[in-house]
Length: 226
Image 1 (spheres, rainbow, N blue to C red):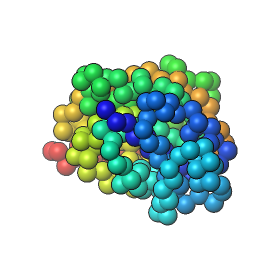
Image 2 (image 1 turned 180 degrees about the vertical axis):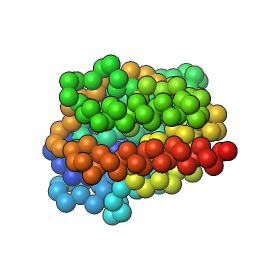
Image 3 (image 1 turned 30 degrees about the vertical axis):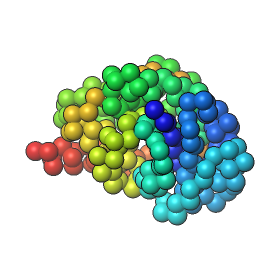
């Protein structure tokens, strides 16, 4: 199966080149970096490292991911990871194997238990725990983590009708997949301390907004199902 990688990135000039160079090109046929209106040299650094760069002027994590989806060509499996080097692209094979072997439609890389000290803040860990608990109670899907390093069949991705333009994108993907009865699997991944300051957990405002979008997305789709 052809695998294409989408990396949303906002002001990741210091990290993005290293991330792109770590991608196993024998596994991934295309690397798409979505420059989400960066004010630094993110796009230039990504091109120099060998990625195809898509520019998305609308700010928002979901906006960047959707722009990447629109740029797909021949992908049969789509992988998402962040551009801050916290995810290790060399582990992409771990995520796509359950799909290639027909055991899953959607695979999430679980950071819990295999992350560097300080890679996730206490508020991130707490928010993740609340979100996964709600998903278990409302959707019947047991997950340890809602990390952004994930892979899914393109057919499954396109059927979800993703629309969240902000921090709720990763959760929207999970709850919509759960509602459709897709086989969701988790695999343990290595999670590293990011390069540079986080735009989400690095500020109180970012942490609160991320938490709000996650919880409201889980509840909204649960109520819609009801």
